[in-house]
Image 1 (cartoon, rainbow, N blue to C red):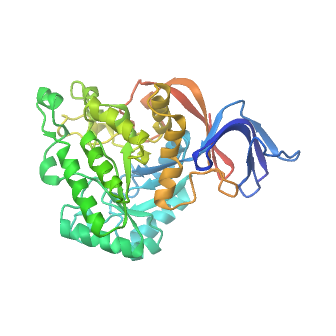
Image 2 (image 1 turned 135 degrees about the horizontal axis):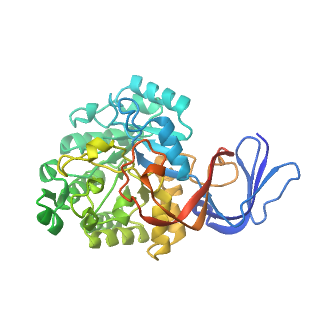
Length: 426
């Protein structure tokens, strides 16, 4: 690869507390050679004038479903890569709820080999916490970690058994692995499909209270005080959960928290008259909850914003609300929808980028999410002001179940570089 210089670019890198106009020099190995307003130039290098566009580290999405193996008709490595790169995402944590489930060494070997052959982004696979995600028997954390597993999650299922959860935390602490929990009490959430409240009553649907989320967070953080391990709450959705998180962080308990861009940008009123593309888990809650989540990011109670990319075929969504599949695609629109929070004055640009880059990289302990000298030149370049309208048929994901069809956004990815090579250009 020839040396490249990206010139006349606004560089925002929270890992270096950098926000300045300058150059980015990428060496022949796809690494950052120098960066910033004092960065040099070279006559022999390939120059790309970015004309004032913004460059940030490639996004790190901590929660996305890939579809392979078993659900290739929903998504596969190729289509997920295309959607991710179009959204400036260069590193993805893939979930283990495939068919078969990623809960053993042979499945890990398969998924890593398949991803290496087909994916065009950095993939960091998760394995399930329990066998078959059934919540009964732990998987072999040590063996799976040695094979390349980045963390452990039962995805949209929660470890209900407190004794088992304590053993999981104890073992995870001994071998330094990341546990990523979906916080929802099964009995309280059973048969529900929407947030409990006025909208659920009006639509005649079974609702779930935010207590179902809060009670698991309280239990897990109590256990964490006794069995400290690397613990991450995948997604929170309510004001009451933030109260528990704030209290425990004030008491010195160390853990991290994520939130879906959907819960930051939408509320239960968006469901309207049974719009199944808004059926999500955790569910969309009240506007008060949504605003509280934004405050949670401001106050460093929430560390990460995720796409929660869940592709579903149209047939599984075009059903009565209670029977419809749960989830929405979102990896391609993750950055643009997050920038909406900047344009409407809800969050600073630095805070948003931090939650999409260096924060998830630190939690995962991977060398991504930064443009420091010597790091991989995984770079997202976007036009901060570019207006566009989300059209499902134009999105690159194989499934088209976006919850923000026809939404007007401001901020569009123009180019994505992976290890110094242009992997996407618009």
